[in-house]
Amino acid sequence: MNMNRFSSLAVGRRLRQGALLLLLLALVAPAAPLYAAPPAQIPPTLNYQGTLRDAQGNLINGKRDITFKIYGAASGGSPLFTEEIKEVTVRDGLFNVVLGDGAALNSTIFAGGALYIGVAVGTDAEMTPRQRLHPVPWAHQATAATTLNPNATISGGVTLQNGKWTLNTADKYWDIQPDASGILRFVYRNSGFLRLGINPNGNVQVPGDFYTRSVFFDNGAKITSNGNSVQIDRPVNVNGEINSDARIVAALGFNGKCANSLNSVGQQQTCDQDIAETFGTDQRTEAGDLVVFIPEDRTFPAVQRATQPYEATIVGVVSTKPGLVFDQGETILAG
Image (tube, rainbow, N blue to C red; front, side):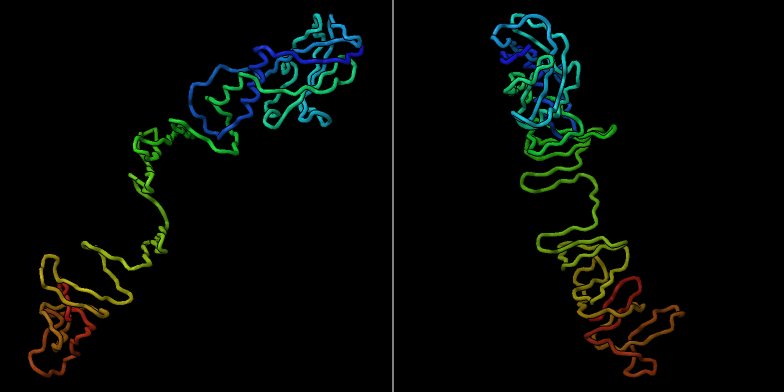
């Protein structure tokens, strides 16, 4: 029988649900779920209704085999979906079918542009023109989707309105959410501890340890960890004290003030040149003093001021540019 006339009718509620589901499945987002209560499971099917007439325009009655195909173009092209439904009941020209029950209706075909459905009855050629598929009211659920496909990709932006984003791996959960003051908080849910906070003004708060190899500043300065040492490539200004349990080495020289005791007020010597070597003494030296080296195995200090203008054992003069430092339990520098 030649069916030369075809028209689609208004879709019913089930069609709305099915078509909407397909649209909803096409709207994907990052793999991490939002952990809201999911809606009822929507079947991956599409309800379709239409009218059949014969060549004279009479409404058809009886059973017919009908083939349905979905295309991505109004004409031509290969079908994205094909399903033949046997013995479809046609009453007064009306028929109603559910697509996807006999052949899998992959939701990914709805992720693109416009779609068109073609219908062929029995052995007749496919009717023309193809009918375009449109979103239906159920699709409004897509604007408030509560679950998202895992391992999906989104090409645009994602907005979370008054909520938080939860990331999980195995039994580890991270919550990303703004607090009342606008600070973006990264919270480790298993312990409830704040691990990182970003202030709208640009400040970053790290309550715990901070591990890094290098720190770069806007002015080009850099702090780098290299093995057992830390390198700072700019002058360092310290307003407080620097306490060291080990030696302080000035590879390029020392320019500043040195005190022989942290509690000695006013007892400072100016050191404005390199410090070459340290020798033990318990005597304070002044610029121009003559000093004598004493063998180290003696019970008294190794360096003493000379008691006369000249001795054969005199080795040098402490100048205003000292090259020696004398020390015994405390640092006493000649200036």
